[in-house]
Image: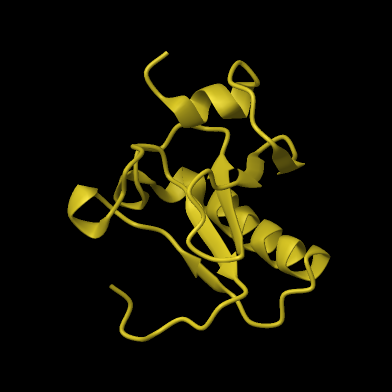
Length: 111
């Protein structure tokens, strides 16, 4: 296995799952950058957003709705949802993932 997130998604790598369904898994980030910092990943391996295609439209929309559901579950009024595309943008794992972060003030521009 070369992708740690694929291992988490298929259960072969243990993680503290917060949410899972047939298409998406969410878990706590091991290196949190905010008091609440969750990662949402598709079970399907997509290396980065720029590699998603038209057949992934429903999956990408579903991830956003799961983020909304988790924000409600954690009672997050203000939160940041972000994905990085490539190493130059800060992506450290080559599996599409979204960071759901809250509990501190975020600055803009991000970076």
